[in-house]
Amino acid sequence: MALRHAVLATLLDSEYSGYQLAKVFDTGVANFWHALPQQLYAELTKLEAEGLVTGRRVIQLDRPNKRVYTVTEAGLAELVRFTEAQSKPSFIRDDLLVKVHAVDRTTVSAVLAQLAERAEQAEAKIEMFDGLLRQLRGDLDEQRFLHEGERVGPYLTCLRGRRFEQENRDWCRDTADLLNARLGAHRDG
Amino acid sequence: MALRHAVLATLLDSEYSGYQLAKVFDTGVANFWHALPQQLYAELTKLEAEGLVTGRRVIQLDRPNKRVYTVTEAGLAELVRFTEAQSKPSFIRDDLLVKVHAVDRTTVSAVLAQLAERAEQAEAKIEMFDGLLRQLRGDLDEQRFLHEGERVGPYLTCLRGRRFEQENRDWCRDTADLLNARLGAHRDG
DNA sequence: GCGCTCATGTAAGGGGTTACATGATTAC
DNA sequence: GTAATCATGTAACCCCTTACATGAGCGC
Image (cartoon, rainbow over all chains, first blue to last red):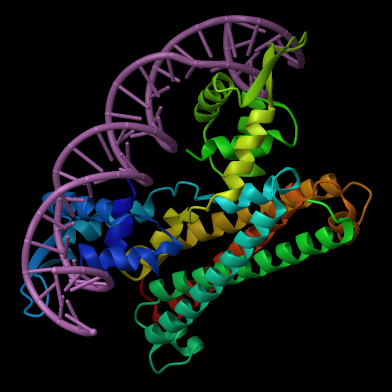
């Protein structure tokens, strides 16, 4: 029962519809939480029933209508309660790392291809983060924004996401280089 | 259904009992997969029923007996099939990052305390990885081992884990420093 | 005896994933 | 009309988590 807190934290940035929230969870938020659209629709319905968010119908002429959500006082209180409670240890689950762990007994070429793909995805995410960070800090330079900006939370998590993806990209490249070098040297696999 | 592949990949390193596997999943393997002991016992039973691993009873005099498992040919084939299939995108779920994202509207002191705690945990993991890496490469230096060692998969994933924890520790410290500086400057809470 | 580690589970319930369903509106 | 995006779900199933249960052997 922690998806709700990720949703509440995200709705502090702006009001969102389920559809918009799904987009955000697929990009920026994905650095600290992962969820599918169906989960988000269900969670928003539950959160509204419990009074932690309120929905507002928005009539759109050029597109289908939508329902956007805002955090209530009760929702914020729940987020504070969550913040003060102990954190569960975070966890990673990564298919690609499982594959690398077993690479000496499986198919090196398949792993190499996936490392290259992952490195590219990481690169794309880095650029996405750079854009997001620029957008968040507006006219200020980073140090100024971090020290004087009003809301730094989202900026700080983006910085973390950016570092993570950089590390990810570099490791993928280093690992691919090494596996390639071994292939060249041994002429097997 | 991907826990099984993490288990198979881990059993390539050595034969393990469920209990030992749980220990390994709590430390080294935790960098790419997370699982509780109950899951592992259940998965080992299923894997043996499907012929992907074989169990062997070990009689111990000084401790309760145990059952240790090895990957079969069919298990290795399944791991190869998995390796060649597309990877699911990896995901992170991290309470602490949710809390940092919302920090401007919640309790800074609680977040600071948890950042410090997390930084310490990361430091401990870095040391654990250093030990593991030394153990894996034996007498060889790192470059030599990476280029000439027999099994580099586990070493490569450890390197990834180490980098990840380093990044984690640094970000926690930087973030805590910044939040502290803001507290000092604004004198609010 | 008591607590610790080793060792292996069962059962219930909640959360997440996969597959499917529906409809509005815009652009070609 | 057909594809693409916007928009919102339902249903079934599987996996994961939480809580509980059991017992052997060691050190004090």
